Each structure stands twice: as structure tokens, then as C-alpha cells.
Image (cartoon, rainbow, N blue to C red):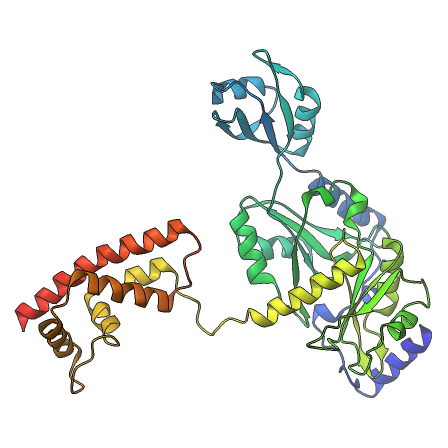
Length: 422
């Protein structure tokens, strides 16, 4: 380890070889560079994380009488402050949001297996499918910055960074739970691979059952990035990361299409060991390159983490967006209801015989082909399919057909008007 530190210092004195010298951006700061925190500040940060971890305030009440009303549920929970209540009478179920996680836990302890009009009910925390873990964040990222980053994609149920119990500094990852699944999906799509300084954010779905206890927050896996391209032996990587603690898993990211990807995953027996290696090895020189270390999403083994990172890297490479955003269906419909836009849209399908204007081409097409309503429908459907992604469901497909039919009537009137004016 000390040899690598000395090599790193020599590289800095020469101006930084291989990987280049670090800029002054916060993303280049390692845990070694951060100042020591006062014990009070460390305790404050850890307490904030514990509070948010336990702040699951949504409960699910099952086996209620089918004629249970919203008012009855409020009366049943009169000792608590309700923020939201919805009763599904068909299923005898109530979805309730209380003031905080403390009230939710107390309601579960007090009311689970109690009786409502002779029926034994169950009270439990609501399951969630909108929980994300964001990793590879700068260690200088504050809780406020993290909240601002994730709040842009929808209303948040809870969000928090994970801090080191030893130093109080951010471990470089955090969690966010959105109120709606589509908000979480959009956040994952937009944030995955997003540059944050010289890092790229990693975003993964999380099983809420993996975040019940505080010790489940801390990762035992490290992602080692910016490795020398000539390092293609996992055994060699294992030796490099066995100086302080022996890893239980260590492997380079390799597959048939790309033998070397420039990163690997190292798993240790405990989160404390992984943090110690991160503190010592991050941004040290290896083979002329400055390697980067980051803690991975907790809860998974090293092998599963490596597979997830390879899949995420492939998703980032295959999900490159164009310079302009994809138009949604509402934007397209707003545009093509404009008569001028309708003529432009028809231009590829009905061109003039001798390169005439749009008006003459449309008139000629109407005269020669006796344009019918179903012709226009086919034209519009073709245009919509050529500019939009395919419908994701039968419901979307039916909306597409209905709207296309309605638009065809408007287009027919527009064509008739063009003929009369000509």
C-alpha cells in the first residue's frame, strides 16, 4: 500500500501520468482528504440516516368488512394523525399514510390482529416498488444536494445518504423512495450514467426488505474503476487487494464481446473492511493510472453486483439519447391538428407529379385518387408510428386509433376547404 502511495506522489510531482492529475472538483476528493468531524456532527448525521430509514409511514389494513367507510377507518385510527386514507371496499383493504414512521410502527403493534365488527384484521407496512439506490456519488455530496438531485423527478417519500459510522463522511451512496413508481422509473432512466464530476452515477432498484435494519445499509463490495487495460487477470487483481484484508470475491468485468472492461468488483467479509480498503486505495496509482474505488449498492453478493454493473454499463451505452428529446404523443397531436402541419405531414405520401407546391400536390392527390377517410387514417397511423415509439399496451393502441380517426375527419374538412378555395 505504501509503495503505491509513494508512486502516486511521484506521479503528481511529474504532473500526473496515465490517469492525469486530479482537478479541483469535489468529485476528485478522496475520504483521506476530508477533514475530521466533531463527534456531535457525526452523531447528528447518523441519527438523520436512522430516522429516514425507519420513516416508513404507509400502512396497509386488510380483511376489513366490505362496507367499511373512510370515516370508520379514521375513527379506528383516531389516536394517529392521518395524512391520506383510501378504502378499497371490494377487497376490504385500506391504504393509510400516517404522520411518520413512529406512528406507523405503533399502529402495527397496537392494532394488528385486532377486531373490527367481528373480523380479525391485519395491519402491516405497505410494500413499495419505488425504492432506488444511487451510488458513485462524490464523498463531499451533502444531504441537501442529494435531495435536490432526486426531487426533480417526483414527490419523495424519504431520501437519505449513508454515512460512515467511523468518520461521519458520506460513503458515496444513498437511497430515495418515491411516492409513485413512474417517478422512480424516470429518475432511474435519467440519472443512470449521469456525469457527476469525473464520476458516472449508478442507479439500481432496491428491495425494501433489504433495508430493515441499520447494518443492512453498509456495503461490503467495492467497484474498482479506471484499471490499466493490460490488467486482464482476476488473480492479479486479487493479489493487489489482499494486502490489508483478503477478499471473499474479486473479479474483473469480462465477457465474450469485451474481454477487458477496465473495472472489477471486490467483496470483503465486512463493511468495515471494505471501507478501510476504500480509504487506503482510492485514487492511488496502479500501472501508471489513477484507479478509482467506490462502494457498491449494499445487500448483494460480489458476483451479483458485478453482473448488475456489467448490465448497467451496457444499458448506459445502449441508451444514448439524441440531441433533441423524443416527442410524446400529446405534443404530436397538438402539432398535427394545425392545418399547416397536416399538409406538411402528408407531403411524403402525396407528392406532386412535377414537384409542385404542397397545395397543388394535395389537390392533385384528392382529384386523382378520390381521397377517402380510411386513406387518411392509414396515413396518420403511419406518421404516428414513424415518429413515436410503439404503443406499450392495448389501451394505448386503442387511443392511437381513436385519435387518428378523429383527426382524419378534421383533415377531410381541411382538404375539402382546400379544394373549394382552389
